[in-house]
Image (cartoon, rainbow, N blue to C red; front, top):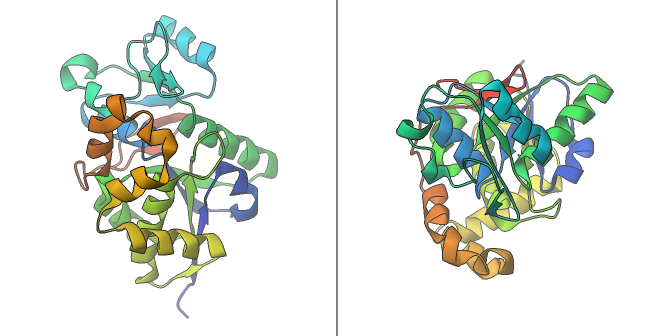
Length: 247
C-alpha cells in the first residue's frame, strides 16, 4: 500500500505547534532574505552557518573565529561584518570561514522550532528552501518521501506575502506528487501563489507596505531572491549549523 505523505504550511512561526509532526522535513522559508543569504554563503565556500536568535550571542562568536552577519529591521547590525544581503557573501569575502548569523525573522523562527521539538521530543530534519534553490528542493523532498512542513518565517511572527507565495509554489508542485494537504493553510498559500505567479514581484510589493518602504535599499536583493535556481544545493541543519547538502 502506497504511503501517504502529508504537507502542511505554517503561515507564521506561531502556527508551528499545530503542524508539528515527528520525523518530518521542515523547510525553513525566509525569502527576503535570510534563506537566500545562507544559500549564497554556503554556495560561495562558507563551510557552515550558525543561526542564532540572539544578537549578542552572535557577536561573541567572532572570538571563536566566526564571521558575524545579521540584521534587525532590515538594517545591518553595528559592528557585524555583514548584514543580510545575499549578494555580499562573495567567495573572496567568506570562502573557508564559518559565519554566525542572526536576523529579525528567520533565525527566530528556527529557534522556536528547535525549542518546541526539544520540549516535545519531536525529531525533524530542517532544510532551507528559497526560489533560488527551488528545483533542488523539490527533487530532495520527492526523493526523501516524508511528511513536509513549510515553515514561513513571516515578519515579526505575522504572515507575510513572499514566504506565503513560496510555500504555495512548493505546495502546488508536491500536490502533483501525491502529498495530501494537512490543513487549510496549504490551500491558502497555493491559491495565493497561483494568483501571483505571473508577476510575483509586483504582487508582493502591491501587498506589502513594509517592503515598499524599504525598496530603495532592498530592490536589488528582492530581484536576486525571486530568481529561480541560482544554486543547486540544500542547506541542511546538522549539529546546530546549516551545511551543504547536494541534491
